[in-house]
Image (cartoon, rainbow, N blue to C red; front, top):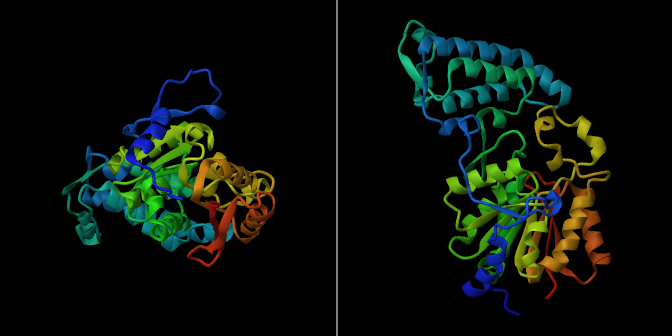
Length: 367
């Protein structure tokens, strides 16, 4: 059975999905609104992308760095002991990255040393010095995540915009894109159709897959959060993938009803942390949206919903990859697929992440 979609058939599926005429009174759980990529406000644009609108002397910049280093040195040991948080070494690295993002010319840091204290040469900054003090105080006093401080996260070969209200993409999630790449290498027809990234957050996985597909298939990315939709749209635009990635606001498969049975692939990094574990998370993680973290009583509810939805949404032979909390959830999900929805999937596998932790469940819709 051929999986590939002709350009005509793919267009016919996308046409109703791209329609933007939906009554405003529809409940958010079933809302499906297309979002064209838009620019973020100056306050939410990643620091390294802002224009250099401020300046400071080298001596004042050095004073800030010395103050921030002292603050970091006194806090690092306690953070590590409290909840395995960032130690002093990591905080000092983050401070360097903050300065590199803030300076129009990062090479200026090479001159920011005690011998330059008397040098009143002005350097261009992307934010004012007062804001740098405020940001680093938030990093230490509030344990605000560094990614929110600078407004971005480095992920694979991407630099993605993030801000409060959007989950910070994790290194282990990078492997989802690798799993998709391997699946397409094993069956080239998977590269021609429509993929779905459910709970897209910053759009990381969707963008990663779109770059693999090149000029072939397309990705539709959904998220319930309007903030995530805005940030994902910004990231899609920055990588010039507006013709490859469609961002939709809505809950899981809600915005994809017109594509039922036509998806060649489904990927998701859903909320999977059991509710009782949320309060014990690292302080930085507690700044992230609970909606993207809390997986309910046992953390498995959304994963089971995605599994059941994949039965009707995937084409025969279509691929899926779901990220989980670890070995226990992986085995539970595999057993569920082999018993509760028996015969719906084949070649179901548990895949470990780069740290050796069983993290992903993958498989194919039975032909």
